[in-house]
Amino acid sequence: MRPVINRCAPCSLDLMLSQAASEGIVFNSLQIRLCFRSWLPGMLSVLLGLVPSASSNISTSRPNILLLMADDLGIGDIGCYGNNTMRTPNIDRLAEDGVKLTQHISAASLCTPSRAAFLTGRYPVRSGMVSSIGYRVLQWTGAAGGLPTNETTFAKILKEKGYATGLIGKWHLGLNCESASDHCHHPLHHGFDHFYGMPFSLMGDCAHWELSEKRVNLEQKLNFLFQVLALVALTLVAGKLTHLIPVSWTPVIWSALWAVLLLAGSYFVGALIVHADCLLMRNHTITEQPMRFQKATPLILQEVASFLKRNKHGPFLLFVSFLHVHIPLITMENFLGKSLHGLYGDNVEEMDWMVGQILDTLDMEGLTNSTLIYFTSDHGGSLENQLGHTQYGGWNGIYKGGKGMGGWEGGIRVPGIFRWPGVLPAGQVIGEPTSLMDVFPTVVQLAGGEVPQDRVIDGQDLLPLLLGTAQHSDHEFLMHYCEGFLHAARWHQRDKGTTWKVHFVTPVFQPEGAGACYGRKVCPCFGEKVLHHDPPLLFDLSRDPSETHVLTPASEPVFYQVMERVQRAVREHQRTLSPVPLQLDRLGNIWRPWLQPCCGPFPLCWCLREDGPQ
Image 1 (cartoon, rainbow, N blue to C red):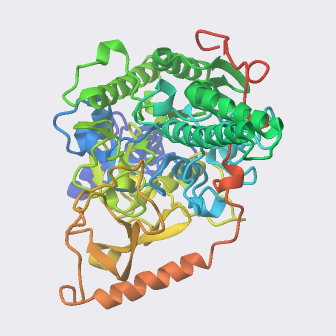
Image 2: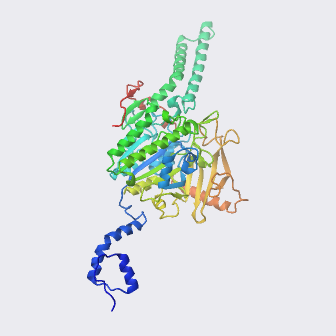
Image 3: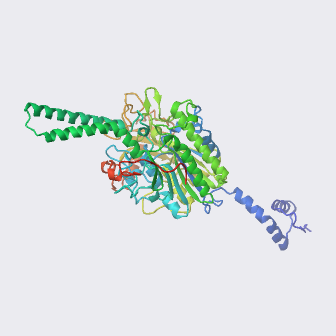
């Protein structure tokens, strides 16, 4: 007779299975039921621990989401991406504890279009957040252009799903449409419950830097017009006094008056820019105009901590949009002179410290394990931010080109780090093509929302790739625009494990042989200073990520097949585009006094309304 188990305690699945296999044990029904009740809870927990994270409650979990975006940071500026002379331990820690993307691509190489694509999951050309005349970002806080109100941001969807949503830091996607207080493009009209930061962008002109985005150009234009009108006035006076020009005193007086006004304008334009664009807002209220630059970093950190504490019971979405590392590289005194890379390096290391402070707050509030963190930059580092032999822009590692260039990797390849302890595998590195636009569908679906079906969404859900349940990115093709002009495209040929890059247009570097457009603020997208390639330039990024070896029909057997496939994909993509108003063209991108935000009677825009978060 075969033995029979006559007790259930201690009862383990391992014992039952081993005895059944080796001794042919027979279990009666009561014993089976008792044992089943005994080991089921523990076994379920073991099984759930073994199941990939994609199925272990992710479908029902609603994590907190913390998005960290640097401004103008080069991918080569971070230790975990190969820099061994810049100290970025906190960002590196995110990569050690999470997933690092090495082929993470921005949808544009300048901030306004890139950030529009990030928030909407759509190429900026679809929303009209591009220009066709060289105005590649929003030029003024008091301009009418901005992210259209009919665009759907991930913040809007998450807010509808019950998330507390906040944006702290830089916006630069517009403010007003018809009046100085309509705030039609304001973050609070795009799904954020809370906003604290700059409605525009930190820039060199905020600190009267020699590296100027618009002050120097405006001063030169005003001085030129002053000289013209002064010459006209003097000519009219001389003609009047010598009776050679029969003219009344009226045009003389008016030309002289306008000359004086233009001279005064050229003198005060720098101060006017500081007051017009360099300000802080809390929700719809201006709190500092102009802003106190040395106070900005501690105020932003206080605001982040306050938001996390208020919303620690979640779920929340917080987008921290750093003012670092854009010129004028405002850096606190205790970081000045501490890096090996001058003021730019000091600013990078200060930003990394800020990341560490934010991570410490998460730990103190018990939010670490329930929060998905994402770190990136809006585009590559600026190579043209250079004075003499001093570089004030980022380093893009092995990649060619930089900020403002439509297709070269240095302007569009950015850091991409995700961390979610206990869910995403630690120390994972993924080399598949991904995009900043992918954050949109990823966070929407994590929050239990639905990706809009009434418009084209160019981003792809990253979660299967991050979890390791998918081997390849869902991106087969990615388009690379410069303003509204398509400069390049990449094809991820999955079956071959190859990523091809085709350049249709490239900027002409200056001087000849240089790697950037020195002498300009940024490389152009069209005109005489770009080259149209026929046939297009072809690179194999899998073997040549630095884009140094142009492939030809003689050197690449599948040259024509690759070209035909990429050009067909471009045609298919272009058929999905619909005409929309261009928000950054001249009409939407010139300063209008009646749209200028001002905390007093215009033009007396000066206030200091608070010293910390509310």
